[in-house]
Structure formats: structure tokens, C-alpha cells
Length: 438
View 1 (cartoon, one colour):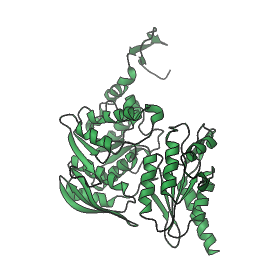
View 2 (cartoon, one colour; view 1 turned 90 degrees about the horizontal axis):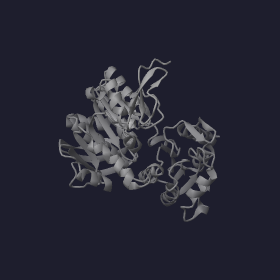
View 3 (cartoon, helix red, strand yellow; view 1 turned 30 degrees about the horizontal axis):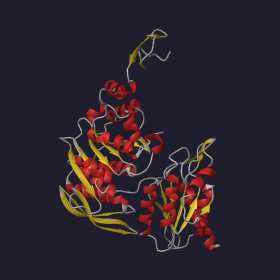
View 4 (cartoon, helix red, strand yellow; view 1 turned 180 degrees about the vertical axis):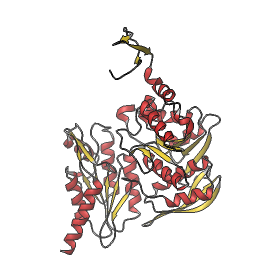
């Protein structure tokens, strides 16, 4: 009825026609869907310079920063990832970090037809495992890190890492920018296929790295470091918050260098970059107000990185509001509780998309990781938790609101309802300011 001329279906099956439409039965169809879609759309990635970014944390920031940098350098860039897909500045929200194989090819065709020259794309482990990016011609791949996440799907860190590694053995890949401060990254860099240029990244000053940050300084104004690359060396100053953003900037610099951008222009692009929605977004911190920071940190490593980064910007207490998602890897819950207890002065445990799980059970599993559970406040109403955190904060304090970042919903058993950490934090700061002047 929809006008299909032929149907492709997973083999085996008996019937060879459905309502008069021929059916082609294909063994392991899911493996070939991307290649079939690429042919249907006339191989759109062959007309684009595609950069794929994978890793547990930092994919979204790296991809969006790449798009900003490419736009600064005069290119028409597009992105696919957690924040959605579209030309730079024109994102449309999506359901997945990496869409299904047919949608990926359709998006690339749209970008090609809209005149884009470059695409920066988040490539999730699920996508690599399920063949969602089959048929995409990646020119450059970047690896951020590998830490605990998605073990509910992969089952083990070994399987999780093996899925990520597929991107670095991609047919036609020209260069790989790999964080060798990460143990798995060192393995990746040591086993790249012949013909793939290795660009080893280090924010820890590793002398064996190709793209290195040295003399890193963090301040209330952002970060500064000495950048050393195969294309030149220069000091870099960035308004981005948090030492971990040095890793993201190194990945951007390496990808741009691999694409042949002039080094001086790369440095100028790095210094032009602005924070990403839901990634270390700052509110307050002036006129006597405490500093509130909203971040997507939802894994043990990301929470530790965010709290460690903010400690350097904190003159008073570091307060953390966080939770753990329902129907996801439960093993990380006590780990995140222990990290918050160790690195924050005050921790408030709250809901973060409980989905179909009992929120009390999730909270109990987080609290199980604490050495002194009586010191942690539990407030399942996330808005109340945010107001409480900012209500107790004083000048010089920093409040990290972690876990949801850019999301504009809270997902429970009844589905999604509107909720925005940034909006609630802004409201709480306004209330704080009004009370102070009452």
C-alpha cells in the first residue's frame, strides 16, 4: 500500500511474495542494511569528509567542538550524535546517539545535498556492534576513553572495548586520533592496521605522544596549556571549564591536523570554542551567587572527572546532586555513590530517569557504595534536590548538577515529562537572589 516495489527480509522464510510484492530473503540482513542504504543514497559519505568519534565519555563534546571549529575555519559542517543531527547550529533531536543504518545514510545524503563538506559523528559501541554505520566512509576516527558503561548490553569490558575497536580497523580509514592516557587507547594505538596514521594524544605530557598538552593550568576563566603537535607548537587558552576538556581539545586539534588544516588556524579555532549544551554549563558564580554547573556526567568516570575539575574552581564547598538511570547498568550505582562521597563535600542523591525501575531501589544501590550513608541526603524529587543544593550554597561554593545535561525530560514508569536541569537551576538561583535581597 505504501508503494514498495520489493521487500528485503531476514532469511529464512517460506513465502516469496507479500501482497504481490517480491520478497528477497537475505542471510544476516542487518549486517548488509548499511551497505544497501549507502547504494540507495548513492554513497553519500564518498562526497563528505567524515570524522567518527567513539569512547565512553567525551563523544558529544568532541563532535560538537569539531563542528564549531570547522565552521570557524569556513567549512559547512554537520553532526550526528546525542544532541541530535543536522547542519551546525540546526540540530534536530534524535532518539539515539547513532541512529539506525538507513537513517544514518539518509542523514548523510541530506547533508551532502545541503552542501556540507564535513560531518563529525558520534559512533556508539551499540552502533558498531549492530552495524548501524556500515557503508559509512570514515576518513578520521577519534577515541576518547574507555570506562565502565553499557555492561547491561555488552556483558564485559572486553566485549565493550572490542566493539569500540571496530572503528579503528575501518576500510579506508586514513588517520586515528587516540587518547593514550587511557589504557585501552594505548592498546588501540599499538595495533592499528597498516596504512592508518596514528596520532597519539596525551593531556598528561606523555613524551611518546604526537599531540600533547603540557603545562596545563585551570582557572575560573577556563584552561590554558602548551600544545605540541607534528604541525607546530603554541600556547592555547580556552574558556572551556574543566581539565578533562583538554582531552577534547587535543582530539579536535588532531582531527583538524589530520584533515590538513593549517596549524595557526587550528589554534585560533581551538581558542574560539564555546561550551556545549549540557556539558559543564555555568550559571551564577558572580555578584555573590554560588556557581551552579550542569553536566551530563552519568558514568563513574565522568562524575569523577567533573567533580575533580570543579574542585579546582571551588573556594568553598563542592556540592553534588546526582542519581543513576533506571534499566541501565546497575553495577555502576554504588561506584558513583562512593565517588560523590569521596570528592564532594555534600552529596544529594536524587532521581535521574528511573524509567520502569523502583526509584527507591536505585537510590538504595547508590547509597550501598557509601562508607557513611548518614552524611548523604536523599531527595527523590529532582527539582527539590536542586533547590536544596543551591539553597544551602554560599558565595565561593560550587554546585554540580550531574547526569542529565542537555536532556529536557525526566523519564519514569509513566513515560517522559518535561524537566530541564538548566531551567530549574536558573529558577533556584533567581529564588536565592531574591531571598538574599528581601
